[in-house]
Image: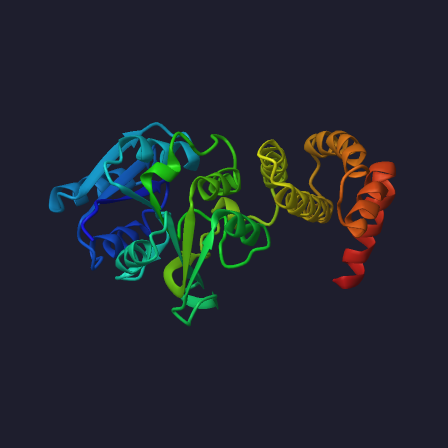
Length: 323
């Protein structure tokens, strides 16, 4: 195992967490790495911290750029990466000391294109969820992995708990201006892979403590981006004649859409986005009427489309009773 691993870290307003993140990468038991720190126009001291690391560790490369968002920062890192293997780490998270070594070993042992491990969810320095403990390896082809991803099984759409052979990424880049950017991208990486391996042990630490994190906010209009991402999956699977995956994507789309609409209603925010969603729903219902989709989803979506305001009133009343 001698390949260079490029570890890409997008950075914005994380000076409280950045040193822990970078130190966890620098201390990896696998040493042949380059650490690409992408300062995405951060207004705090992050840029200075990055430069300080580049002076003490020749493996650290720093990109300073104007703010373009998480996707743009990751893309900037991909474009300059020199490694045969690519990994992504969010700058408020951190790695176990042997994560890269464990995943690279699995990548070699099973001749896989993507290796994934489990992760711990951390809140206020306490583990609130840990999903892997057996250290067993599960090896599957790309079709199984994409199916697993949509069921939130072993293989997940999150981008940061994995190693990717560079050729898997190809020309695929993260979409600018979106949250849930992983949902638009990771399944395409899976599609490009012949074989994937999942190592059932937690080696990545996911920090859920940030109150200013986009994903930490209860509801934002941009949460509907997840619906748009899964709609893209439906089209992608149809274009590649993957019928079973297309059906799974339709069910996933319905579930996510219903969840977003309910959270939108409960949040009490007002937005033009819901009207756009309802217009698209009218088109979707015509399509779903002719193609397999869960009847429970279908009935509820019809109710929303036919009388959104009555549906919204019912959801609010249910929320009030539950509260």
